Length: 173
Figure (cartoon, rainbow, N blue to C red):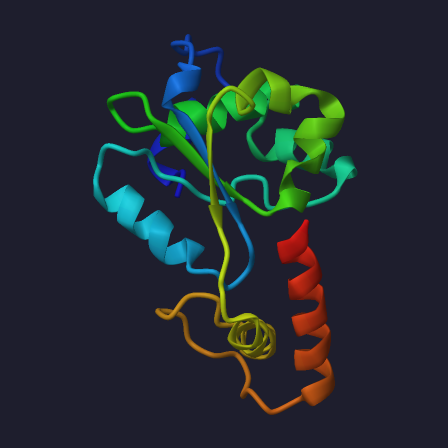
C-alpha cells in the first residue's frame, strides 16, 4: 500500500497540516463488511486510502509502529501515514478495531490526530453468520475474497460459539 511513497519514509519532508475536518476513522468489527466499504471509499479517489495502518493492538506497539515508518514517535508515524494515504483533496481515512487505537490513546496521539475527525461504525446484524465467517477466516487464512485458502475450513462448534459470544460482547461495547 505504501510502496509508491516509501522514498519519503524517514526523511525530513515538509508535510502540510492535516485538516481534522478531512479525517475519518472506520471503527469496525471483524467480518462486518469493512473491507468492502474501504474498497468503495478508496475507489472514489476522493476519500483517501483507509486501511489498518495500526494493526498491532497493544500499548507496547509504539516502537514497532514507529520503526515501520522510520520515525521517532507515534505522532510522526501518524503524520507519515496521513501524508502517504490521503487523497489529493486532503482527505485521510483509517480503519481500526478498538484495540488498534490503544497505542494512540496511551501515548496521547489519538487526541492530536484522530479525535477531531468523524467516526464511522460498522457492525453486522447477523452475529451467528459473523462468528462463522470469523472462524472460517481464521481457519483458512482468507480474510478477503480475493485471497487463496491456506487450509480447509471445518465445522467447529466450540470455536463458533466462542466467536459468537465474543462478538456479541464486542458489539455491546
